[in-house]
Length: 320
Image 1 (cartoon, one colour):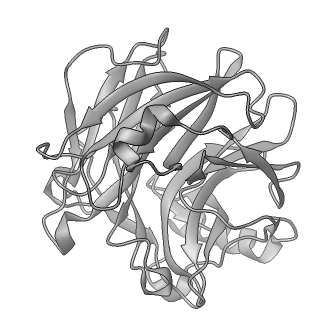
Image 2 (spheres, rainbow, N blue to C red):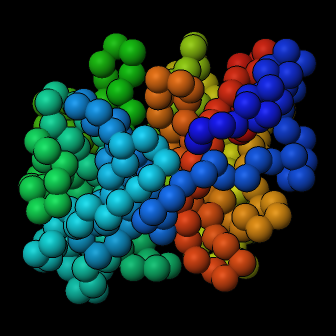
């Protein structure tokens, strides 16, 4: 992410013009990352003592660390001794999905999903650690589950804390789309039984998933993935965004289309040798707002993608 002055100049020009990249050809390549860069469904948190901790889909949840957001090193597994409590949802597999990592109240928190591909028999769990190190994570139990008869899917969790201190969990994949529930900040579990409908698609197998809600200015921005992951270089994943003044919505894209009616504005898609970028996560760093995601190479390998996010004169994000 260093020595990127030409991209910064382009970003400043876009900001002055109130524009955003209009075609896939104008999308930037991922910023430079080195070391252990294999990743699927990544999320990153800044460590209070400096550096970064990344969590990604893998057996027992894969952890990586970085001192500078550029060079990443393997840091073991959150759960190296197995996750028997999740076996009913994974079919006995140790593979856990889409960890959402954050730091609150003096500890690291991680929401993560247990499921099998194409099934809505799924559950989201919560774990915590005071250090974030491999093997130090304690599972706090199940937060929410879906069944084979549900019309929604309990995977791809994301925790958002509002300006007033409310905790909300956004999640979902395919079926009837993206959902949201309120959490009790003292437990990290559900505060009530209400479930909000946040986004739904009606084309391409109703493919919308991997929500991430990020507060910027007077809006909550819903980042999400459209279309299909997990097919290597044939993946058609792309990153979309919409916004609302209320965390529960309604969310609308740049054209004014509701996300519950399939709306979403594309901000990153396949371009050049970058295939199927998706599963976005966003955080504010000392230099900029940062977009974290995975993409596939021409060989089909899943890689960590990191870019910066700018905001145009209409307060819509663009990638640079």
